Image 1 (cartoon, rainbow, N blue to C red):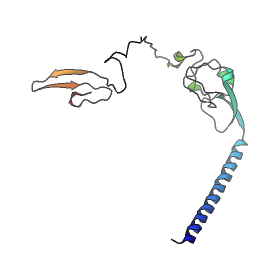
Image 2 (cartoon, one colour):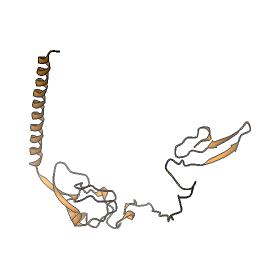
Image 3 (cartoon, rainbow, N blue to C red):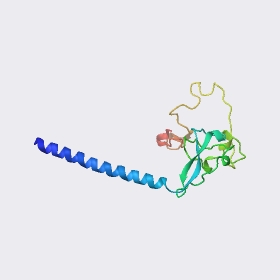
Image 4 (cartoon, rainbow, N blue to C red):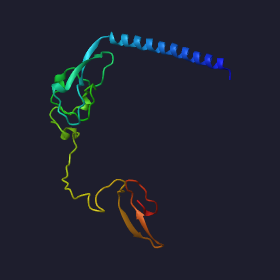
Length: 173
């Protein structure tokens, strides 16, 4: 292969890359200056990462400017509207606080706040023995469901009842 062709092709590729990257840079710069110059309002965001069930107070929240023409559904504009409400989903730092991420005002904090209205929560006490004896408890890759042995007139066979994996071929779950 001719060495000059290789260098000419490489130079053309570098020149094209330089032109395209300059164009993209200028477009991004133009778009950023246009969107920042429009009318703004403030919205409430998390000042730090917040876990599920956290009761919000003013030190956990802050406001940032947000374009008026790009509203977020259910957003809050005042920190006081979010104070003393619990989160029903985890929230990352600088993530907008919206109404569907917060429990109702009178629901309290912690995991009970995450239970939807009309539903009930249930807690079960478990001691240290459950799940440690051989053959008892759930372990990774265990299959759930039930098995029953039926007697057919033509032959004996074991029929499976659908389990978590749904494999009922030849009576295996």
